[in-house]
Length: 274
Image (cartoon, rainbow, N blue to C red; front, side, top):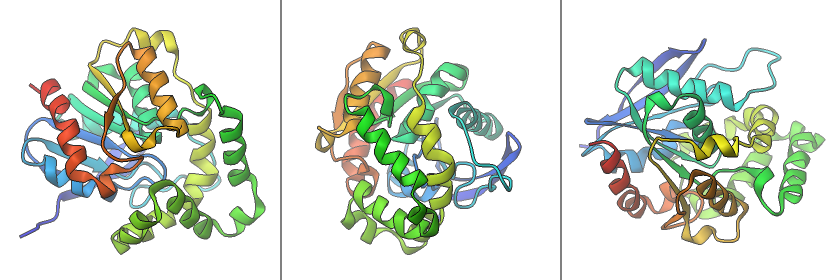
């Protein structure tokens, strides 16, 4: 029988975060990027649940977590990292090995600097660090177009569908569980009008990254070569004094390559969790 995960809402930093928990053993936390939803990692979480307690969550303002207060139109990487650290502490299962992807990897880099005590290891997957890449102006202009275009403000869900089809692939979008797809589309306004500006402008301090003592592995998909977030991963690896390691797939292997992804990340999670 394919039973569902334990789940609930937990008070963290003045908001209620929805989380899902699988398995048992050392804690592994997954942090998602835009359209944040715990369900994005379900297949990977189930595969890792034989060895770890795997926790996924909806970041603040997304899906089933507390909404931003009315009129609130900004967030920060400090706030997002504080949420992740607060969740680990509130669950009382840490320290944790943490996997962050895309915008979630940007949060994880901030978490490494801000709350290293809650971490036993960090896997940084294709961080969306726009300012450090060679085509930063081009990428920033595309993001600005999304966040300021009047048609996007008038039709955020339609724009989100196009955004998802481009970033996770049309086949992955079509294969999403309908409830998950609906929640992700429903996160459009938070993604476009609250999160994108904060995520796309943040750069962690390079010197501080060089001083990080938490074990870190920076990874990128073999099929992501040429994408700006692959270059950003190379930058992060250099600052952290480690080598970039490739894993199967592109930007969202947790959707279409979960078994291969788990096979690639399990050795690091196991090593830092002993």
